[in-house]
Image (cartoon, rainbow, N blue to C red; front, side, top):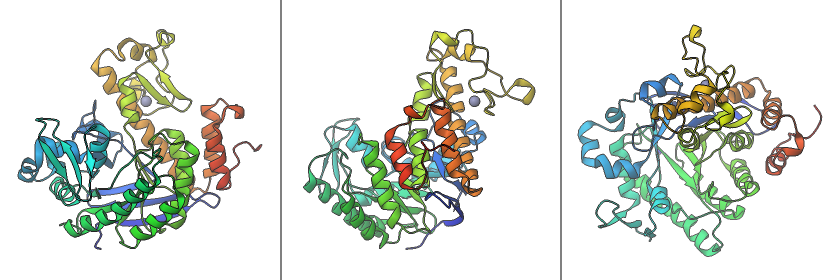
Length: 404
Ligand SMILES: [Zn+2]
């Protein structure tokens, strides 16, 4: 199928499966690996698009389900798509809308035709089909669009249902490809399903890779499965997926999940956690997460993170606001500006972390990056390292517990 992207591979780690590349999309080039902030309703809660641009973000997410309900397809068509609607001239990725329905709406039911649900506005019966999802995403005009897939909980014990969802997702991909009107300017990504069954995952990879979409997502994870299982699925899929296409692991995640998944060969990630946790007063820093609402910060006059170059942490003589932890404690989880400022810091942290990951891969120093990353979070105490991360990284040649 036609593609509206080019994927330049620059470096591959000589130990792990990590890759550094650049994804050229219709609204600019995106350095990979990348974390994509989630702007649910065409707005990143707590950030203006100027502020988001300042963090260096080149690609963020919108939710098709939310945009399809409001402002709706007619408004999107009239205004000329979501880039114009929200004043964002960089890249957008939209999900298919299916995940929102299945996760938000208890009354959603999946049939071969699509996902049936009751409108949250007026309770009327509605149906989201693969065709309707693609048509909506064509109206949104996002640079990357996602197929509608049959999403079930990874922890489901029903093997027959997991296989049905996998097979159906392949059939729905064909319907999405058929419906997609603008392959020359919007890139359709397939979504690998198959639960935690590695054989089903392999089958799904083969079926979907044969459809030759411009990019590939690994879906159905981050649903409460054990991290060991998550790593096995990513590792199994990346062994099969073509080297020359971007790989997106959906709904991930925490910094630890991301650094490990990069070592397993994944390129793209999204998660609401960094922005959501900011609204609760939690700052992401290299030693983990700081609960700035805790009174221990009331007299702490250092920045949220020493050396962070975000506008909040940067000293005033370097053009920043030079805000202290004591100030953040004073306003956080109370004033909306506290949420704004921490959202800026957290998004900046995630993007900066991705930049460091990329540079380490380019320098072929990713194993050393991983050692320092875990040492920083756990204060050098290897007995605290999570077993799943140690195991997954050992599988790609990095022993976090070894003396170095
Ligand atoms: Zn900062």
